Image: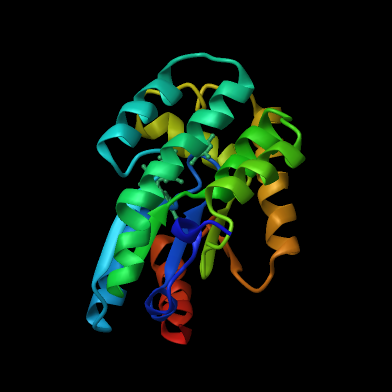
Length: 212
Ligand SMILES: Nc1ncnc2c1ncn2[C@@H]1O[C@H](COP(=O)(O)OP(=O)(O)OP(=O)(O)O)[C@@H](O)[C@H]1O
Ligand SMILES: Cc1cn([C@H]2C[C@H](O)[C@@H](COP(=O)(O)O)O2)c(=O)[nH]c1=O
């Protein structure tokens, strides 16, 4: 195994928490709340996002969210941005012992490129093994809502990007792949019913963070 891909022992004391869900599920709304809970508990927290999180990653994000491209190009660019993100931000933070909260990570590639766009999961697995063979989130919070709830939240909030303009069946397949992965990896996933008042969701999140 390549030395640069190995996690050192210090990284094990820190945790990587990822937020996932279809567009409009409400995940980003809760990130500042969870970051503040973790900071109150005494952790130094790096809050970041994908695609993005680095200068190059943000440039790739602008392309990915606004430029149409072949689905394999899209998957490869997502993982290229992720490779940079891990190298520049995530691995150094975990090495320092900081906690990392990321608005999306590799589950989004499986859900969107795999579920939504129907790219073979084996290709995504190969990219995952290449880009982060030894790194997985310690906790993945999957914010789940019915499609029509997500759509009405998005419609009220902003101009849609490339993904947000996709049709209902794309999001149905994306959501189904997220839920399939949550069932496949129950140790790290928590599925949050995001079709509730924000305060109720935050109460559940507080309990989850305390249990960490
Ligand atoms: N529980 C909730 N009840 C009602 N509205 C909500 C709730 N959670 C979030 N919202 C609203 O829905 C909109 C989308 O929320 P948010 O940006 O957090 O979604 P998201 O899942 O991060 O979407 P995206 O992935 O597209 O960025 C925002 O206007 C937000 O205020
Ligand atoms: C990491 C990642 C993201 N996406 C998609 C999912 C969203 O539609 C956008 C990011 O926008 P957000 O408002 O920050 O959630 O990118 C994807 O298709 N594949 C990925 O791996």
